[in-house]
Image (cartoon, rainbow, N blue to C red; front, side):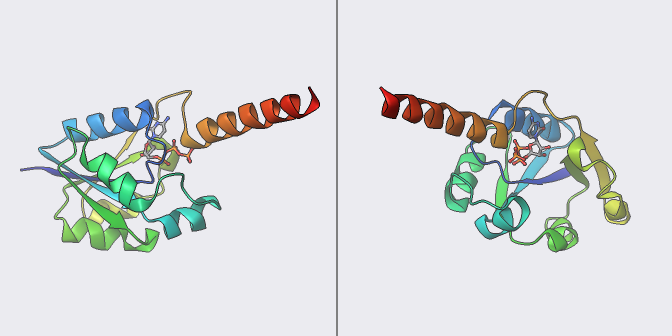
Length: 141
Ligand code: CTP
């Protein structure tokens, strides 16, 4: 039994998230996902996620290739999470290339290429600029 573990915020779930989860699952027999807490996301990205940690965990848990989810409360605890879940492989997107190589003493570390052209931040920015533009146009008409 090969256990794969991966981490992320997975806010405003999109096809890049599906791709990384499916590819991570293909590397083993079981996929466990650490979903970043709201507080951790705020400290990393400087904004609250659109969907709460409970909603994001529920969404990720409903994905066919995900076997289990847990809340990632600190970036510093990755080693503890890997050990607690007996993970054999840590998967990260290649936006993190090289950043987690020190966990090779605990498990295999694999960086998967990101899906091009989609990200949660870009989706949120696009929606905000659409509504800002339309509310300005609406106000002036
Ligand atoms: N991911 C991916 N391809 C994308 C976007 C994300 O493979 N186009 C992967 C990330 O590498 C990570 C996981 O999905 O392994 C969760 O990433 P997350 O940071 O939650 O999503 P992003 O869309 O990158 O969010 P943001 O734009 O806020 O950074």
